[in-house]
Image 1 (tube, helix red, strand yellow):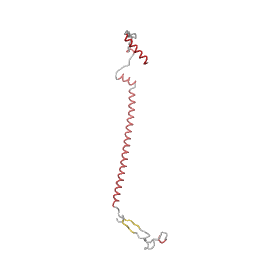
Image 2 (cartoon, one colour):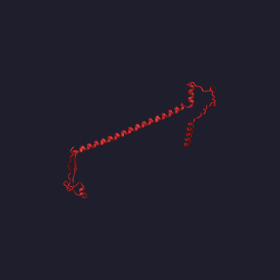
Image 3 (spheres, helix red, strand yellow):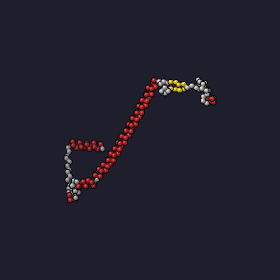
Image 4 (cartoon, one colour):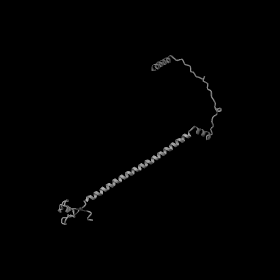
Length: 166
C-alpha cells in the first residue's frame, strides 16, 4: 500500500529534456541518459483532514436524514388530509340522503297515512262539525261620571299638554 499515498512527478527542465518540436525527443525520448527520471514522493495525510472528512460526512448524513424525515411527514399529512376529505364527502352524501328521506316522511300524504293506519284516526265529515253562534249585541258601556271641579281642571290641563305634544 505504499503506492496509494504516493505521487509521481518529473521535471523535464531538470533532466535536460528537449522541447516538444524536436523530432528526436518525440521518438522514444532519445538516449537513456536523456530520459527524464520519474521520482516518487511520499505524501502524508494531515491529521485534521480525516476528522474533517468524518465531520462533513456526518453533517451530510444529518441533512439527508432531515430531508427524508420532512418528506415523510409531508406525505403522511397529505394522506391524512386525503382520508379526511373522503370521510367528509361520505358524510355530506349521507346528509343529503337523510334530508331527502326526512322530506319524504314529512309530506302531507305520509302524515295522513300514518294518522289513519297507525293512530287509527279518521277524516272528519260534515256531521261532526258543530257551529256556535255568538251574539254581537252584547256590548258593555260604562256611563261617564260627573267629575268634580278639580277633575275637570286636571282633564283640561291633560288635554292641553296632549295638544302641544302633538
